[in-house]
Length: 480
Image 1: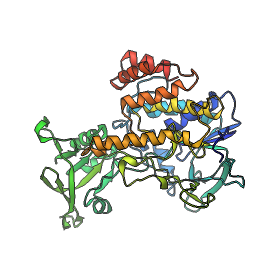
Image 2: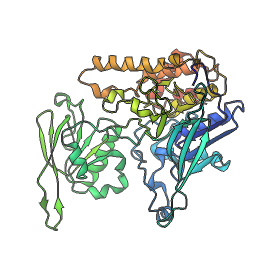
Image 3: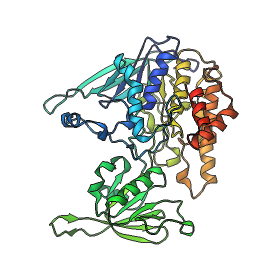
Image 4: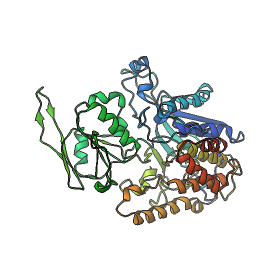
């Protein structure tokens, strides 16, 4: 693609029917001055809602008729367990139990209009290579149709060509696993699980189990609390920020706080009175403490974006042939936690080398609904030709500046917070940087979301601190 080309697509596919995808669909349809001829959304589940689609929300008949061939995509959310803040697109303060229904109601009109296709999984996205490399050729999307599939049916595969694609899915598919000695063996033995597979509805299955929960966020505390209700064994929360000197926990509680795990040791299996073989772990912590006979370790350690189904033309510096396709994620480094990112994004939205590819929802925002709303409004303005070159540069090098600046900032923080490196990630900005980023999108939007940087930063601090009337009024005024 020419370095001066800014695509103005006519057909756009949105991938993912969660909060980011649905608000992106809305903004592309309603904030583009009619510039697009075709905008559709595909969702791999049979319902909209994304991570807010929970099995326990389905009726028994739906569960009973689900195909056995269709894969399950577990969600990290539940009515009791919500690991993201929920302020709706119009400023509504939502509980975990309310968010799923809110998403369904928000998306109903788009399903009714036929611009949402359910049970359609994106298998791959491939950048089209044209004979004229100065022109964008669009994207070939391979799809798998999971509707009306049973054991005897062949799964239908199709291919479609789109001018532009927005990826709003798959960012909760890749859990972050710490590099802890013995963890891989514990996972193979089924003794270590990711938090997505935890369900309060199945808590009774853990009666009598001794568990260690890894993580220091809201989700780890709630998992531990729910487990404590059904087991007569201690439940431990492991956190790298734990210090025995300032631990003020209730000693009568089943939940106990411990330090960082150094090692997992698989104990010799033994036969139970019922004749089954039981395997357990010994867990060793950085304090020197050991906990024996651990039945289960649940990791609530977060996720990172790694959409390996997206394939782009290889960059000239990495291969002599730009007709060769490679996974976009091959230019990132999942082995270095603070480098995990979707690379080369201008404004953390557009793929700099071909800005007809965009990503919304991959930033770990403190207010993700508002974040996705502002970002996708900016995207709609960019693709419909309503943004100037200051906001949406002509040349690749200018578009790469966002990514380069963020990488420098992450490296600086990694050095500054040495010893607490796991707290530094490319995709988590923190309140001040998040507010500044959104402010930059607002100021470049031509007044669509008019608010000053100072006001945005202050009001976001209020929103992050609770559901005060002032915060809700601000969110309703700005997050339209």
